Image (cartoon, rainbow over the protein chains, first blue to last red):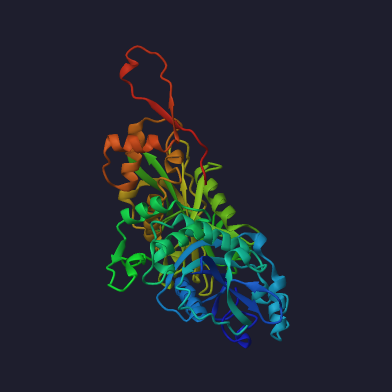
Length: 245
Length: 245
């Protein structure tokens, strides 16, 4: 929800940005059987939020989302999908924004553009946890991975945005090849099952899961190279197709 | 994309509405094996558009979409789903809006709020064709059903919005019980198959389709009442569950 530009550039009139519209992104990573998301902490406020930003007047909204994502993770060309636009009046809450501005030495007037009602377009991204380098913006001093099951209290309706992103991820699990973007290039069937179990938050039967995954025709089994004692090592797989963002 | 208020209320400053944000709705109906949508024709302009509107400053965006839908169809409590927010710069095209304003006796200044860049939240609705009473708004003189395969040229990116709505409808066909909202209360298996074939734009095998539909456990077969010669009439079905919007 915050601008990624220098605070001094956040002028009262919000010039340069579309008025009343923001983007927020739920950036998923998977590590050690945990689904994680990136959370920003705003400097000297104790406020936690999803990484987000505003849309430049000459920028597509999807490009604005990609820009924020690259700024926060250092990654390019990652899986990013718009999933819902949040526009309830109930989400309007100028207090945390006032706090953020004040913590950055700005005493906003009552009609400061940041204190008006905002509608936000929600995006979710799937990134390879091992490759992303979380990077705070100029208004925040921390950007870090949090387990989905152990998030700090998030400002405004950001908890709701996370919940809706997770529901979308679950609904898309099979036909969007979610695993392709969350796992390393090669993985075992157990890795894949662990990812599915974590996203769905339920145990799956090993043989039924393996049968289903193999029947989809999207996995390629990698030939084992000979090595002493390797006969007990599990098969490694990779996805046979390119992602379909 | 147009306001449903009196043209005189469309003040240059757009007071009362959120700036730069609109909603557009693709309202699907099904009749005689054709998928249809509602299209508005703007008075004295030759311009065709999706029914849409703006969001009042004290209104949830989903409520704004429901309001427009009720105004256009006379129907309440119908299946409505947000599916995508369109925010490319390329969709910005003030010319048709200028034309619409002029056709209503308004000579807009260059900074008229309607001539600025708009982002629009797309919704699709599924309505019972036989119950909807299309109703033009104050800026248009016609609101009518058009076959999806035979639409007039639509203004701005509205054709793209229709296409994306159709893709979403196809992707949701099974798990959202699309048929429940597009068919009359009771229907034959042939009616249901015709709907699926029309939405998917492909022929389906009769017995495989019937098997699949019955296996979902969502259909209830209605007992035939005795009537002379009725032994050859097809079974009637209805949906056993409420819709899940």
